[in-house]
Amino acid sequence: MSAYAAAAILIVGFLSRVIPHVWDFTPVLALSLFSGAYLPGKQKFLVPLAMMLLTDLVLGFYPSFLVTWVGVAAAVCVGLLLRRSAAWARLSACSVAAAVVFYVISNFGVWLTDYPKTWAGLADCYILALPFFRNSLLSTLAYSYVLIGGYAWMARRASTQTAAVKN
Image 1 (spheres, rainbow, N blue to C red):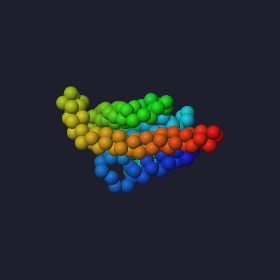
Image 2 (image 1 turned 45 degrees about the vertical axis):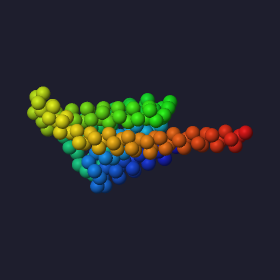
Image 3 (image 1 turned 30 degrees about the horizontal axis):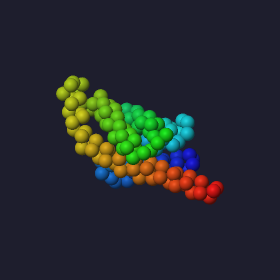
Image 4 (image 1 turned 120 degrees about the horizontal axis):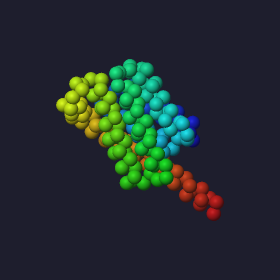
């Protein structure tokens, strides 16, 4: 499963970032959550970060790209909470947490590179990023329900069918 999942994450993540889309409405954070929940070992972090590297090679690097990558890695860490259960309440909470953590981390990087280093500059950075946060939050919730919720549902269904066949 992990080789197929890793390849799918790279392909879907890459395409979602390079094709035209609404700002910050991509499955990147949901894919990072999925990686944290289901990929083995170091792949949890390597696959989402490879996705970011590949797309940034195409799209171009920007001053705060490394901080953005830290935000993606943080979303993987949140995904670790889904390893035992992807129940709807837990999945929703983790999706919101991933979007919030990413917003806080990535926009701190934007503040460091693009805004005056004042409290007012920090406030401006976070306030001006709210429309992007809304899209990121909505996309993370939607894609997490489809990707992680769908995967968990299929896994439960497959185990139920396997148990029925054994009986």
